[in-house]
Image (tube, rainbow, N blue to C red):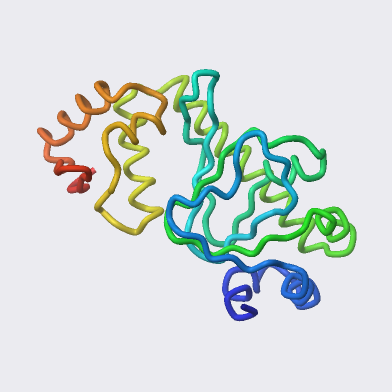
Length: 210
């Protein structure tokens, strides 16, 4: 586990902190679709991503979801940290986008390490900054972009995260994550196909030239 940890965080954390993480962290391998965090849960530990990716979603009163951002190798979830330190219920849902490896850090260490380790303090502040930027980007997209632009951005980001031009999502699943209807997504995807940007197949699509 130490080699996996160092490959993701070795340039971020000093050796003493890496050793503490090894001693008290819980190593987990979770499959695609695994729910790491659910809305309404009390959070008892914070994830550090070793490999893979996790999508973070918000839910409205009707139960419809909106994709906020992705967590990748070397990331943590600042929302989770806020819930831990404030002892409040989670307001987000986190699901493994692919098979993912994480180390879970107990909440008692979050504040302690902020005082003890400069690298951890910088990591936490940088995480808050990055997640806030991503939230503002999502907000700007919703407020200012047309749905076709949002869809193209979604497809590009999905392809980047998964390192694959094939996107294994149904039209309904894409609609859920973009908080719109399946009919709208199907219409826009068909237009992209007619323009030669994508190729549509049953239950998946292929990016050709976005």
